[in-house]
Amino acid sequence: MNLEEIKDLIKLVSKSGLGKVEIEREGFRISIKGSQSEPIMYQAAPMVAAPVAAAPAPVAPSAAPASTETNNSDDSKYITVKSPMIGTFYRTPGPDKDAFVNVGDTIQSGDKVCIIEAMKTFNEIEAEISGKIVKVLVDNASPVDYDQPLFLVDPA
Image (cartoon, rainbow, N blue to C red; front, side, top):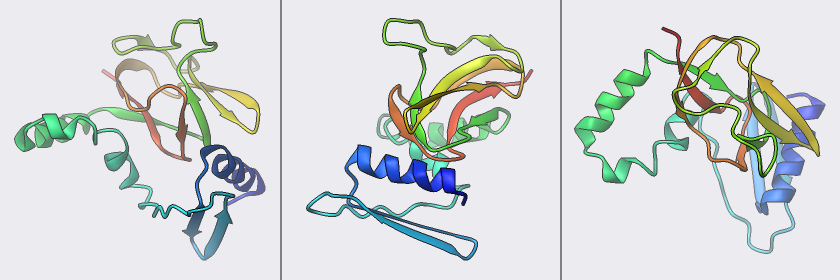
């Protein structure tokens, strides 16, 4: 974990009002305490497991278990666009502007797909692949973690 990632994490803790965040990776451990009176405990899942819990949770109660399994197997043919940093995810360049991409849009490598704001800096995120946007996995103005899935893209 580099200094920029630590700074981004500190900012995320202060903005979100989290009580305490602890991260442990490859022999490195960091604990950041916020100013909240009652700490809230969160345990980060492994990088591979985090995407499963992040987006489908609101949809799962309304769907039958068999269809959820079918959707997961269908998603395996798609490529995931992931967050390159910790910050706040924005689908639009401004409050009154249209989204960079919507479901069904075709993107090319190098197209801007979103903005991630970290430490008062707005970073335009470009697609590294070409294809069709199948699913947006994060709500606008939501905090995102490093390597968190943002979009599913059909490369066909």
